[in-house]
Amino acid sequence: MAVVNQSDDVLTHPQASDKLTGARLLSVQVPISIAVADDDGSKYLVAELPDTAILESITLEAAAITGGTSYSLGIFNVDGSSISKDAALASALDMSSISGLPVGPTGAGIRQAMTAVAITDVGKKLFELAGHVSKPLPGSGETLKKTKYRIVLTATTVGSAAATIIARIRYLMAA
Image (tube, rainbow, N blue to C red):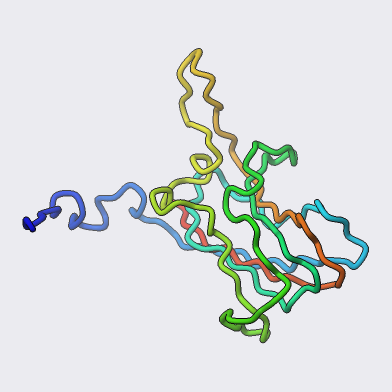
């Protein structure tokens, strides 16, 4: 096997990266109330973030929700309209059991909620994950980015028990 030298691309000083220069790590923590009467397909606002946010991690912490077998996490326009990214961040999250999950400060199970983001998309800005561009080419059909996006939890199969889900988002913002 040949020796690989990536020093010009990978081992540059961190300050040389446009994604790291002066970036601030921010976080949002939001309690989401799931009611017994909520129907399948219910949507819950998790956060409204700037278009240039770079998602580092999203977790959902909750006790088991009886019958809550499928939740997804997606990206929506600020007006609430979908941009066909209902499950851009995570899909088919099973909230019905905490078996085998790490336990958070509340004693409930912690689920990683960026499971639908490809490893090649880690580090992209939120508008890029939404499939938008900063400068669309005329006639290309590309969508101009918005200034903010909403992260929305959708209960595909909401379950039959009331619960509180603690959503935690960590993201980077350029200074």
